[in-house]
Image (cartoon, rainbow, N blue to C red; front, top):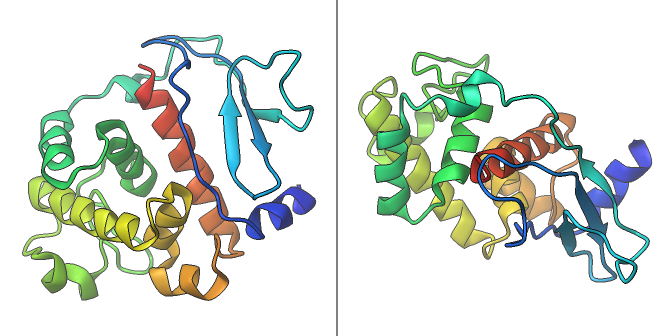
Length: 199
């Protein structure tokens, strides 16, 4: 585990959802391979020509998805923010799931608030008046994430790490910062993203 974490910390990660992944409602084991350039590749169908370095990343669910996968309480707001800010709907929903578990009144120990856990110092910058208003919070969080996504050249894992640990930390390490919380956060969002994408 520690060896794997150290390897991940030394590379830039590009997360690509392969178009051949199962259709809605279907799930399959997902395998990951890191090439010589440090790019992370995923597949659900290893073949005889697949590099041996592919390792199991996510195991197939054999039971029905938990009820929260199908929760649609904020889907309309997420969809609107997704279109407005150019962020994938399942990705935005995955971030909200990881940040607050869909609790609009959530407040972290560090003071982050609302569905997308936005810090008070960012309220003015993002035009956020009421952090507990779902519409405002989702739009502000989506706007902030898009800024990070552009800043880090469309590298999803780095953008997620910056959302969790701050862009300065990612700038400093030039990869996912070596913080257990941040590494786990990136892993969880990518997992939720894959699952929501394939419902």
